[in-house]
Length: 384
Image (cartoon, rainbow, N blue to C red; front, side):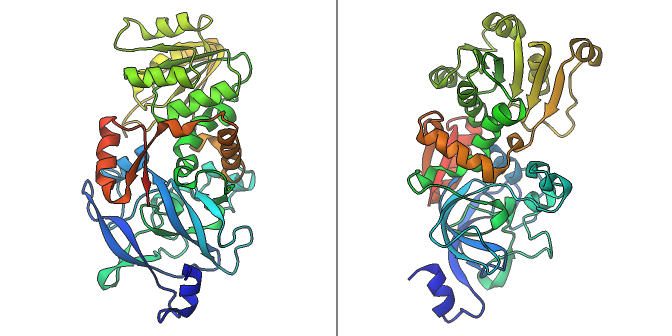
């Protein structure tokens, strides 16, 4: 029997209760515990999804630690799965659809109206509040009826089932490998989108990418799609430098193996680069990235810095060279448009992001987090 049938026929149908399991975080910096949970029936604009796979992102690591989150909470924001039931107001998603969940947005503010949902005026409440923005409720509870905050990024996908909205749910082709598609909703989207949507790298451009994690390596693949002439990757990990070359980098720089990183990047490109992307969030690295720019060059940064970090850029230098510096959120992506493009690139063999993936059992979520922090995995995916 499907979940949709169970909602209609089970003794709890009038309440719409769905049984599942979730990795619950009960205290900041704690370990995840796999617990039995209950989900409410989808509301009018909501969707019930059975999760097949979910990526672990650096944002999950940060929110598990010092970032203030309501507890208990279910994290996870790179989910992929199969639709089991939809609310009466949902029109573009049907039961049985394969879907990827991305960040949520209000759909009503000026930025959402101009197809810039990653800059939604209500982005923080919609994604980091972990509750429904309208009434502060949550669709999930655990033993004894205790509420569990389960709307992280509009999904909370460290679970067997989740409630999302049509707004942050994207239908994908069924021939694509669903269990690994979740990272397209955040990490891969951020890296590729920063190159293709934000910096708008084109044929013949020279690009420097600082950091070769999931975001940086996605940017490498996107720069190849954009036909950049030079793609220089700065990364201390030798294995990741090698992978960057295999994925399309034209040169790599070990920042620990050279005296002057800026000079090394300039030597690997045509005296500098037209575009630079920092994925580390480290102020000194952002400063180096700026110094690699040619006149009228553009620097974007997407890495999460320390909360008290300041931008290490000389304003006069910026003015004289006409250089641009901007932070990007989610690669300036409209998920409904960009995620299907990324899937097509993958199916065409142009975005082999599966090479970044390391699979884990759902029960091994704490190991996946440990490996993420230690750098032993580029893009962990929990298979559920």
